[in-house]
Structures are given as structure tokens and as C-alpha cells.
Image (cartoon, rainbow, N blue to C red; front, side):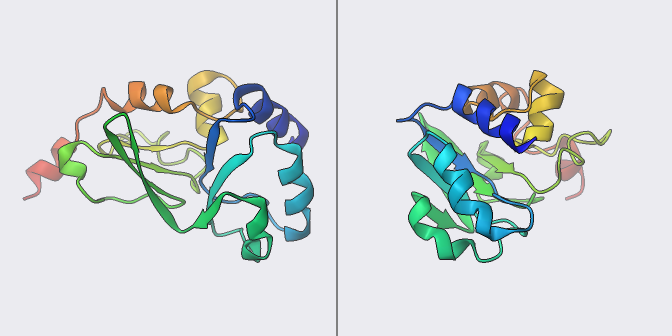
Amino acid sequence: MTDHIIDQINKHVGHDDIMINLGDFVFKNHTFIPQLRDRIVCRNLHHIIGNHDTKIEKYNDKFSSLSDMMELNYHGHIFLLCHYAMRVWHHMHKGHFHLYGHSHDAIDRHPNKAWGRSMDVGIDSAYRLLGEYRPFHIDEIIQILSKRESVPQSFKDSG
């Protein structure tokens, strides 16, 4: 599966593109980080640290950045990126997006899944929504999340 995921990344993410991985670069053995990273052609790989990323700081030189969270502005769309799903995030009421991993699509598959403009962007979600284990393009994410309410009705009703 690792080979397939790397092949899919290289198929969809070019050398000069920017890729942001939302955690868990490797599952257990951190010593595989350098060889796996070297197989990814994208040279601009930012990594949000996940719960399985023990000792990833040791390989800081393999990434454009390592952080716990990141805020990103893409053509006026503001994103908060974190490995973990949040129920509330900065400016969610203004329509800002929240992207996460960690849950392997378990939250988004739940019947009451839509929590505002947040989304699991891991490969399990990509498989469910796009039919392939591959990275999402940011424009695909915007298309999906723009159809959702900024603040879920259940959140509005609770106050």
C-alpha cells in the first residue's frame, strides 16, 4: 500500500507544487522517513505533526516545514490545518475552512457528519469521495466545503 500511495502522490503532485500532509507520515518506524520522503517528487512538502510522528523533528531537513497547526490563505479562502478534528476553530462563523486527518474518514462517514466547513482530507476520505487513495487538490476541497453551511444549524440552535 505504501508504494501505491507514493505513486498516487507523485501522479497528482508535481515537483514544484506545494503539498501539505496532515500528520502520520509513517505509522510506527520513524527510520523509514528519509527513504519515503526521498521518493516523493514534490520538493515543497509541509508536514503537520500527527500522533504517530514520533521523532519526526529529527528529519526536519526533509520537509519545508514541520508544525502542529497551520493557517493558509488560498485565493481568499482561509484554512486552518491540524492533524486533529476540531468542533470550533478561528473564524468558522466567517466561513473559514478546517482540514484534518487522524480519523481515517470515521467522522465524515458518520450520519451527522457535516460540522460546518471542516473535512477529513486523508486518503480514506479521498477513496470514499474520489474513488482513489490519493491527495486532494485544494480546489476539490473548496468545491466540497463551499456547499456546506459555515456554522452548522445544530450549533446555531444550541445558543
